[in-house]
Length: 156
Image (cartoon, rainbow, N blue to C red):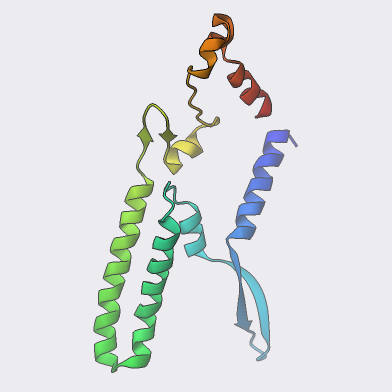
């Protein structure tokens, strides 16, 4: 097996394990067993590509709102709970679509480059931005070829 295929399989194994949660399942004989199953919400959150230090807090608030949607059936009459649950579901879906939209944005300026998930999956190399400020003191030859680029390619 080639080295790149082995690395690819290792990454998939790590991700697949990270997506799993333990669920208790009742067997036909009445016994309860624990099984590892993939949680699609974990997959959805992990595949988002949002460079913000507040995204985790947004995820927490979204999950709290989703829990409130289910909890309303414990605290009010059935007809009222259905209406409130449907309203909260609409808000949850709108927030999820806004997260998807933010995650699909790409950004590039003089200091940063942010690709979306599709761009990252289609590329075989990672983007790096280099500035020549510190390299102006080096010889022109070193600056043009960029010793930092060589070092990065050796580390990849």
